[in-house]
Length: 309
Image 1 (tube, one colour):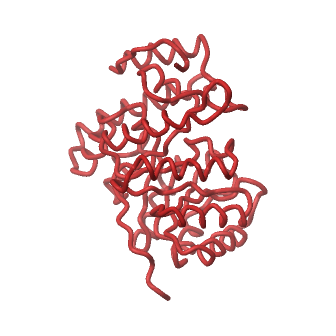
Image 2 (cartoon, one colour):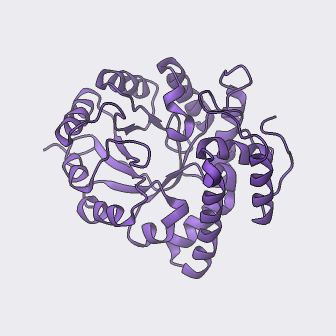
């Protein structure tokens, strides 16, 4: 087997939100400002058009535009890993080819979320992607939202594909995360997608980093939290992890949608969250006040009371 591409993806990478205006258009200036802020916080990578970027609500042309905006804003300071997941293999290949053509450092590929696929179907999908486009691939597993789960045994098979170099493992079941680390970390880099709920354990067990939306609402303290995990300063790390868990629960409480809550949390702090795109709806009252009060109690500085500026 030929050698895999060499990458050194580590630390906290931001799954960047896509700010939409009241007409549903991408706010490009806000997007680039957010990328700049995240790099300033200390993030080690930028991931456009992931789940946090509402990729399901974007056309392929819009996804490509986000890749270009992220590249322009990052200016080579950190890796840009384009979210190229889709429901068809051909679509993923097209997006991957474009990402490579503009110099993206890699692609993050969510498994197709419809229809229900077998493990062999999923393996075949990723093999076709790896064979078609010579660009480093980060697998993306998020079984809480996607019925096509990448289980540890399948991830181990996928880890042997030529261009598969990493995974964002966002299972909420730490036992599955643990087994993926045990079975695959000698061949691919394991990134947690659940920094907020088990970051201390994930990093302690050997995760190379995290791909997460949380820096966009939590700022530099989220990077401090990760670094404390990395240095083994467990007491302070657990203190911050509890804050992360409280924020995660606040954003999900009473049936709230995480992606809308994140944008609301950004907007309340004067950050460029923007509006979600339908079918998602912005956080309205009384939920907005509950989020504002909850964040204030956690020590976040609130500068606005609006769902979006």
